[in-house]
Figure 1 (cartoon, rainbow, N blue to C red):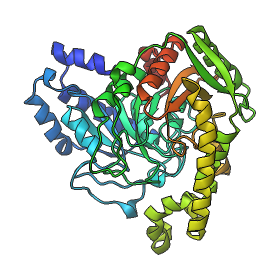
Figure 2: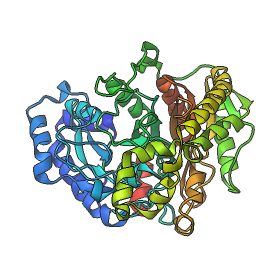
Figure 3: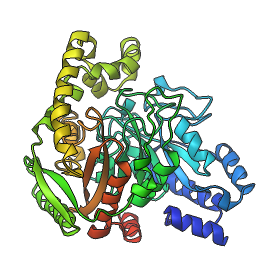
Length: 465
């Protein structure tokens, strides 16, 4: 099976040199994706020749220098609209065909990027493992006994398996970070409102973020700089301050970072040493590690599914659950089961508690440049998820569920591998609108840990598949 170096800089150089054309590249990538799909179930809809033709024809009338993302292939999570292509949210009974693309998708296309397909996901973006879809379970890109992670399962696989330069996911509870950690990718969960969610099927509309999956932090930085614009079509859109432009992406000379004093690894024998190594890399780069009390972050995380916010998810799909329950997967119905009983009184009480926790958490975050955690306590297996669809899934969200509730920016970045070859990584997070600075930290970790060697990663994946 053909492999390609799909980094933005490499493709630009090839297009400028005339050694590659978008038509040739996209044709080969679609063929590769079609060959991978029966095993990995990464795409719900791959664009046909007729569907992709307008994008290629437009590029052939353009100069490569005129568009910053000229001919760059990208994949779109199938809860994000692409004009004329069904959006399913991994539920056929919910499907509709949008007349226009989501604001962010339209922006990327205008910049020259080429959509190649709509990717698989945990139904209604409810899950962190990638197995909750009627379109097939998504296995890990490297190890067949593990899941891809979710809910942005297919989006992570599209980049990890080498059929897209980058992809769009969404993240409410960790869906743009857990799959990155499990597949050796950078997962940018930007500050809420920084990337438009207009044209996105909501999970929790007040919390949802659109995310980027990339091979490198530098590419995520470039994409964010090109697309972080306030959108009048998105009521939750926020303006990006000048302090968070591309110039903030760089190396910190000296910095202080937080490390939880109470680390949870759920009995994993390897994760503690892998995390200690990532911490040591940052200390060697000039950082001072400061232990923090992580208990209030964990308490905030529990509010997302144990509190009344589950009713916000139900507000999107509740009518379908009530009128056509068989159209919704049983595990999703189970997650949403208590939502109808949630009351406004409970919601306000939970909001008051969340605000109290935010004051405590912010006091720690504000005293530091960023905080470092594992992306998840330990990987869970497909067999575990088969036996218990809820418990292992919840474990994956231990270090992620609080992030949007507390309004932080976060970047998941790979830093190593477990003995079985499974990728392993950490997450750095901080105040809203420190995205570019956090991406700079992620780039430092990639460089120092050596996992930025894309060619070696692609070679491993070719052998695995």
